Length: 102
Image (cartoon, rainbow, N blue to C red; front, top):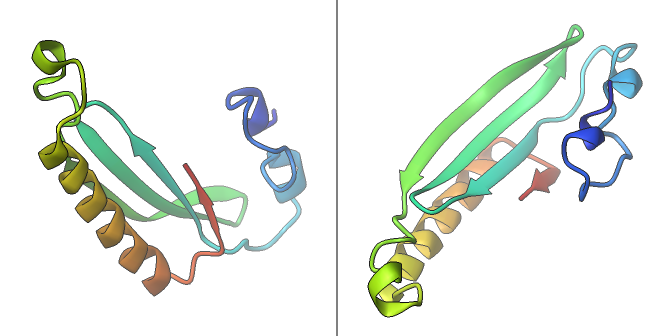
């Protein structure tokens, strides 16, 4: 099964499990998911044919706070997201991640 079938917008190169099953170890990969309430960071690596989670973190950014009333994402929410992404960048650099999927 190929992971790109789940994420149609991602390039297939390097993401297909069939490409990884014969490899001893891959470099860490980071994924960032930004939602209405949270920003998530997951850093993982393929080791011995299984996914190993190296770092898993959640930041509450509350992007949706006040959107219903104002119709826009407010500046405070954007600042919280910016702070979370800056924090994630530091962690990604510490783990020497070469690929980030957002």
